[in-house]
Length: 186
Image (tube, helix red, strand yellow):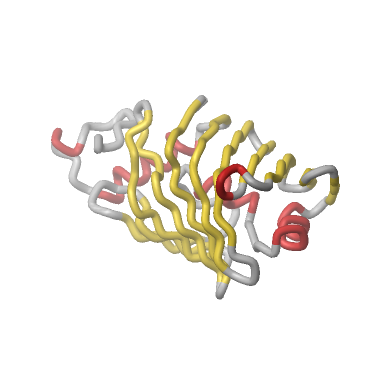
C-alpha cells in the first residue's frame, strides 16, 4: 500500500511522525464531500444479516442499496442526518430520525451521521474521540459516541489510503464492511 500523501513528504522521504501524518490525512479526508463505494456487510446483534452494499454520499445526503445473499431481498435507504426514506419491497417509510428508523426497520443500530466519516477513516466532527494510529498515521482504532471502530486494512485510492475493512461495534451490536471498490472521490 502507498503511504498517504497530502502535501507532505512521503514516509520514505523522512516524515516519521504518525501524529503529523495523521493531522495531514485528517485535513485532506475531511475535505472529501462526495464519494461512492461497493462492498459487503455483515451485521451482528438481534438480527444478524449479510449482503452487498452500494453507498453514495454527497455532502450530508446518502443513498444506500443493501442486497441480501445471492441477490435476495433488498432495501434502499436515502436521506440526511435529519430525515430518511426506506424502501423495501413495495413498502416505503419516511422518518425524521435515520438511526431510529433503521433500528426499527432492520434491528440494527447504525450511526448514519458518524458512519459517513468513519468510512473515510476519520472521526465524525463535533464529538470527542479516542484515536489509536498505526505506524503510517492512519486510524487503527477509533472510540467515539460509545462506538468502537476498528480499521483492519487500507487501500490506496487516488492520493488517499481509504479503509478496506471497517468493524464498528456498540455493546452487543456491530457491523462489518469490506469495501471492494471506491469511486468518485471529490
